[in-house]
Image (cartoon, rainbow, N blue to C red; front, side):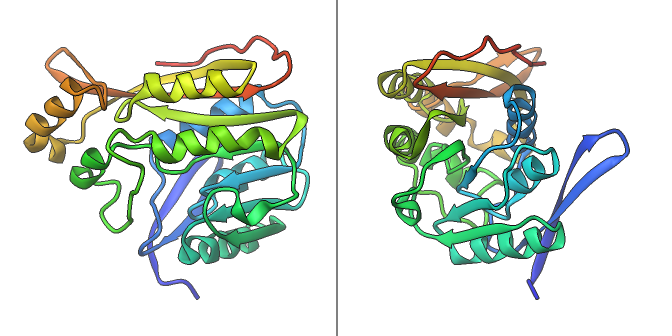
Length: 252
């Protein structure tokens, strides 16, 4: 029995809501998770062997399985054992067969190749994570500009993809988005944007605005001001080493 902290809910279809349990110490999904799921849903064509990398409580993988995009079993991994246990628990609750393993990045998946890899590892600058509500009980070791873990996933991913496999990954503007995108274009022949969504800065972070401004001045993060609000964004990308179909970009 997991010691539950909260619930995450996502509406997959009208009148159909998916709910997963999030125990203490496991990253609680954010709006980015919903944008990521919907972007993959709009682009992926049919079920495939899928890896939920940085699975947390398993929300992304379980949602994709429910949407018919996972050829069972789902593969999922995370650096934290609590997250892996949480994913296994939630998959059992939703009748989603899973192979869940603990380990850093692709280490648990030697000699495996996938049709879909969904990267949802931390991609937020350390200085932002330290003052945000998102990492209150979870460590974030993605570096001063948030690019270290995501960049390493992108570099390693081609070795774990089938010839026509797809890597889906978010880029958060509270990281060096240009640097991450450059790494993707260096390691994949095709990189396409699937979605863009802007978010208001959480109220509790306004007291840290001077620190955020410093990080932006140093080129580590990006945000904008509109109508008296501070806004940051999530972009979702797909990458592959074969010719991709043209996406329909969703956004605000």
